[in-house]
Structure formats: structure tokens, C-alpha cells
Length: 402
Image 1 (tube, rainbow, N blue to C red):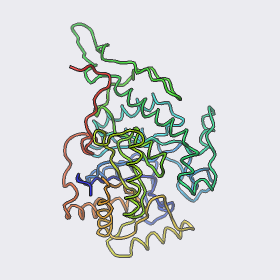
Image 2 (image 1 turned 180 degrees about the horizontal axis):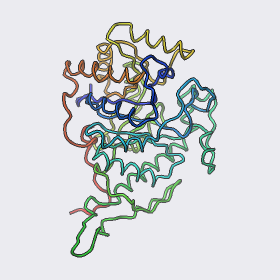
Image 3 (image 1 turned 135 degrees about the vertical axis):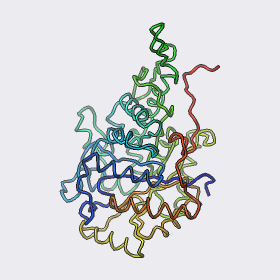
Image 4 (image 1 turned 45 degrees about the horizontal axis):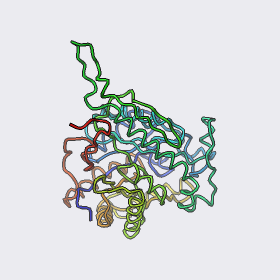
């Protein structure tokens, strides 16, 4: 079992992770308004959650992960995740804000500046989830390149997908490295504002990063001062060996998708092996491991399963996911989380099946149950998102030693 505190996050997406959630009786009616998202994130903060994540993509959602579809009976469309997180930053005070950012068709300089700005707006609560563009159709929005077209056979095998997309993960690794170097390109005290001499910055404390990689050449420095955290939290979702290596090379948090405790143990062993392959010492650079679970929660036994079945009927098919789909009571979910935690997990990212219903069930039913068992906080500590996750304060690679 992990010796540290239990970490808990939620993944917010549309009206919920079930594709028919928007049709439920208590579904929200304004998915594309900032007020809707503000209510959700404030509820997550009320529940003392570590952080929330926001999904994003470069094209309308699709029932097939590798190609667009023409369905009009499911939610399509979203707000820009980074801009949404920046809007929410001054409306919250403690909960972490972790948007998804596509890195296949976005320049790393722009990514680094956007996330640094978010960290300033959130006063040290920002993170980001780098995501590759695995749909070839997304490239047509930009017209500069093509990406592999996955087939139906590909998506049945996570290892086969990873092999087809390995160059995109290699490129994404460079994006993360460039962003991290740009965040260090300003030393913490580079802004001196000396009115007597007229010096606003100390030029010796701004640094060219002079990055030369296989995919990018970036000189730097950034236009944005170093973020409050030094290095905002980088998180990734991983299902196979190549994504595990991507997480091990440059991330602080990895989201994994076991189906049971034995599966969790096996996946964590693969994550450890990936860290060994890339030469990462997790004692010096911890990699927090979160398991993903889609949740439908109700106090009455059987009610959550019936609610999911109703949504399945509206959808015309039973909902399945890359992650475990849990239906049950908060107590039953608490049992599952603590059982899986003993495999060595640091925490969980829960995907509410329907919003806001299952989010409030997490914050007002599951969290109190975990508190009663003495495994979850009863108040936020002060500090940054990195502090809360037990990640060390990052040293600026360009700063001169004393």
C-alpha cells in the first residue's frame, strides 16, 4: 500500500462520461457556458479534491476514438480547455486545474506560455495533460502534415496502437522537454523592477534554452516569467508500453486503467519497468500513479446500475470504456478504491458518469465515507498542487549555484 495520503481527482467532460448523460432527467442545459463549469469546479473544491481535469480535442467528439462520425444524438463540441481553466482559476482557491492540451499540432512554445500563464492565474495550482492527436482527420484542420490513420483492428490492441503512434509519442516527449526548459528560462528573481537604475529585469537571469531535437528547434527564452510552481504538474493517460515510457520520461503523474487489483499490480509493474528503461530514479523524481474509474453512484443498492441501464437504453447500446465502469454505493466504491490502493496506487481519477449527479455523489457521499475511514483529508493544506501531490520543488536548471 502507498504510504502517503490518498489522492482523489475528477475528470470532467461534457455532461458526463456516459454518451447519453445529456438526456438524463437532471442533465444540465448549458454545457458551453463558463457558469456550468464554474459550478462543477467549485463542487470539486467543496469536496477537497486534489485536482480536476478538462478534456479537449482538435475535432468534434466521436463514438470511435480513431475517426470522426456523423452522430447527432451525443454531445459534440467543447470549450478550449486551457482558456476554460484560466477563467476558473480566480473563481477557486485550492483545487488544482489540469487541462488537456494537444501537442501534435500545437507549437511547444505556445503550450509552455499558456500553461505558465495558467499557473500564474491559479497561483500555483496548474497542471496539464499532453495528448497526441491520434485521429488522422485532425491533421486536416491544419494542413501542415499527416498522421497515421488507425484501423478498427488497431484500436482493439493498445500495444498495436502504441507502436503505430510511437513517432507521435517521441514528438510529444520533446514538447514536454521544451516546455520544461522554457519554464526554467526565467530565474525566479529575474524581474527586479529597479526604478532607480531603470532596470526592469536582470538580463543575466533570462536564458536561451537552445533546444535542438529531432522535431523542434527552440531558442527561448519564454515571454512569461517562471511559473509559481517552477514546473507545473505534467500528467498523462497511458494504456501500453510506449505511453508508459512517455510518462516515465517527462511526467509527474500517470493515469492508468486497470480492471481489478491484480490488473493494477501488473500495470504498476510495467510502469516501473518503463521507468527503469528510460533511466528515471523515482526516488528523486517521483511518478504518482492514479487509476481511472468511471463511476455511477447512488446510496440505494442497485440504483446506480438501474440509472446506467436507463442511459444505455437511451444510447441504444451498453456503455463501455477503456477504464472500469463502476455502479454501486459510495461505501462499495470506497472498498474498491482502498483495495486497489494496496497494489501501490497513489490515487484515483474518477470519471463521473453523469454530471452534476455523480460529481456531487463523489464530493458529498464518497469523500465523507473516506474521511470516516481516516484515509482522506478533512481540509486543504496550504501550498501548490505540486506540494499537495508530494512532488519535490524543482531546481531551475539554468540558475547559477551559490
